[in-house]
Length: 171
Image (cartoon, rainbow, N blue to C red; front, side, top):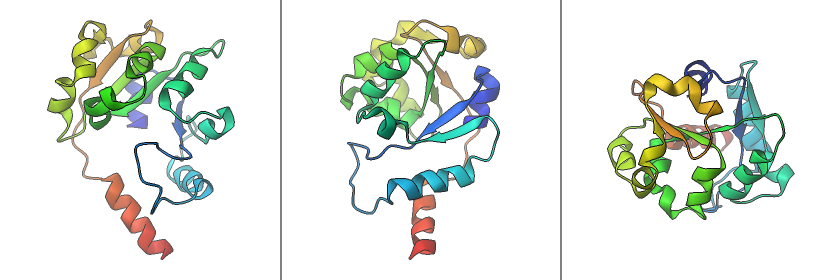
């Protein structure tokens, strides 16, 4: 996803924001933050990928707060990258309207969620702000709200399966 984002969106960098604790997920079974940052850094071996525990540094807990803080950074434009599974349930997130208004969003296709994502409340409410795929390179400079849906070839990897394998290695 990150390499596709660099190429198709013409981004300078992709930052992986390792969250101290996702408010929608259980803490049980989650590796400590330092371990997750180190694990992400081992995977993100590309000169334009950066792994950051930014929410810890900013003191933010919710995506809306993090994105609003990033929107104030002078000289930077941000595009939030997310999977279709997150778009499908974005309307359940804290202040989701403000999230969409804080920065441009690139939604990456993720089976089997793509159809439900494109029919989700957030996609419907912000349908007029959706850029066609032919204009992906314009997304980073678009004034929010702006978003695009990016179709991809399916990839068999599952984050849940990767975490389970990592737990076996640790345990």
